[in-house]
Every structure is written in C-alpha cells, then in structure tokens.
Length: 117
Image (cartoon, helix red, strand yellow):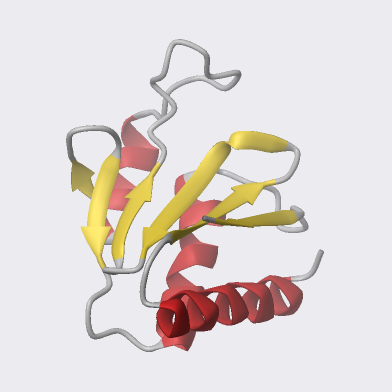
C-alpha cells in the first residue's frame, strides 16, 4: 500500500468518524496488529506502546517513545495518549503516517487496516 493510499484511507475514516459524532476508529498495521492507533470521536488519540502481556512485538524502546513524545503523545492510563482537537483531517492523516513509520517502525509499504466501532 502506498503512502498516498493510506493518506486517503486515514482522511476518509476520520471524516466518517466526525460525521458520526460518536464511536472510534482503529488504524492498524495489517501484518502486525500490535502497531495501532485508536482515535475517538472526541479526537482523543491512543498509540500502542506494545507493553501488553499478549503483544507479539517488543515494547517500544526509548527512541520510539522520544519520537512519539515529540509528536505530542504522553504515557497515560492504557497507552500513549494525545489529542487532535481542532486539527484538520489532512494534518491528522500526516501525523498518523509519522506515527506508523517513525514511532512504531512500520515498513514504508505497510498495509493499513481500518476498523470502526
């Protein structure tokens, strides 16, 4: 999947979430589901730190955590958390791509899986 294809998928899912006004959308690396970002209708964002007992991937290391902190994500109750309140869909989509590539270490051609709830 190309970065442009993912960008369109991010923006479409975020626009649908905004129109619904409730629920959430989960963006995940299709090959490694422990690499995920969940966005709520309130635009609260959670990024997996992969420290769950059942995670198939190692926990994020210091470099990844530093990168995600620079993107505005801090340790929270369950995962790393931040907010996109007031952001545009294209800006959110660009940050999602940075989270997956730079923070979670996904391959440039990773396949995106989108789940709505």
